[in-house]
Length: 108
Image 1 (cartoon, helix red, strand yellow):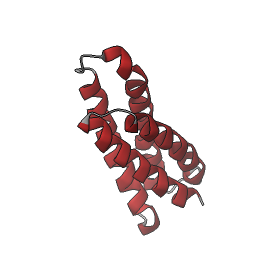
Image 2: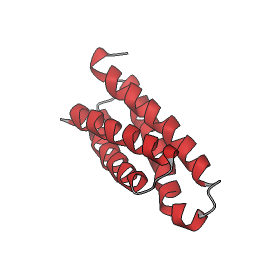
Image 3: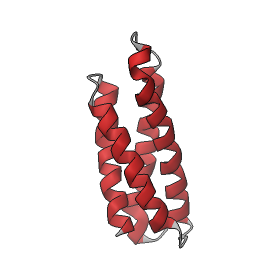
Image 4: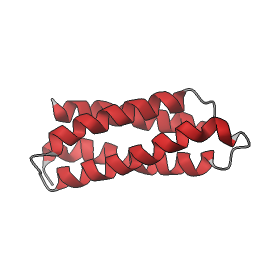
């Protein structure tokens, strides 16, 4: 794996796993309706993070462009998670915002 991609790939995989955990945890919350957008964005974010990490691992010429999109989704997911007070949402917001920054760096 290329050194230039290592930090971003790692951030993407951590973000994907954290989003999966957040979505699963949100499904167990008593106010499920309030968590709907969080769950939806968690699933999208986890998906694109895995795809972005995969393309970076392949040193694809499309990786920088996909990282730009990944950064947007991570930012939006992190912002949504930050609105909630659950510990899983707070941790997810941190992982998403970190990944968004790594992806912006990669896309630059």
